Image (tube, rainbow, N blue to C red; front, side, top):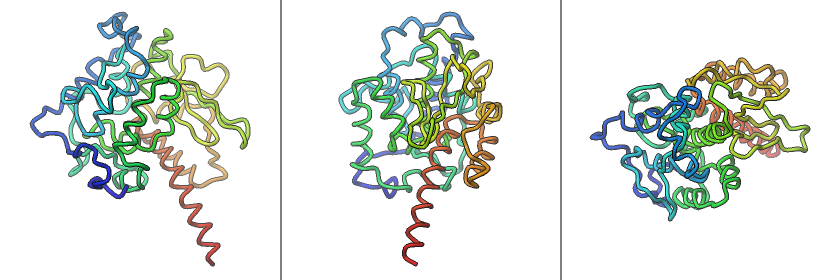
Length: 311
């Protein structure tokens, strides 16, 4: 993928949101129901909980790939229903983990676009590389999965979902990780946990030959040597409580972890990443930063090896 205007992608003529739409519409749709089971004993969204599948949760924000609000979005994409309500206020709670409460404002001058800005490169994510098959095809393939566990695994591995931000007003946020966080909250809420009972937990691989443990709907990031999970059952593993209520608290939670999965003594890159993670407040931005930093580091390693071979 070479840029937002690549004609091969044909993503329904991607456009920035209409200036005639009140910016608060998007925030009202997401954060207007930001009341977890901890805060409110019962709500309209809880009544429909049993009717909403996890597939609907993963599909609910696909319209953000076009920079559209919930009210503007189509009800169907690639032959499947999308833009359905997320139960138990989880969408709003997830939004509050990454964006300020209240009416959104344009946070980056001259960038109102559904394409995410990268904290690693400073450029739009679409400049990082081509999405195999094109953006529209990759999105269609992602949302058409019919098994919830396979859908979760596909989102964890998705490159197309990471191209987009979760709000055009906050372009460093990530649609991919907003969606995974929303699913994790839904799954934990359905298990009876309130937000104030949840933890960020580190699942470390046993050795270099073993993949880290992935828990369906609760793992929100997978790396070669570790995974991060939202859970109400931390056990004896390295974990930190999320807090009393949803907020832009990533740096605080990351700092509270008893042990971090990065080898900061051995790799300078991880020291830099760790230092930045102690400053970033937005959850989806931080998770995307970890994933993208590792990918950038691997690319630099490959280029270095190739350069050495040529010499």
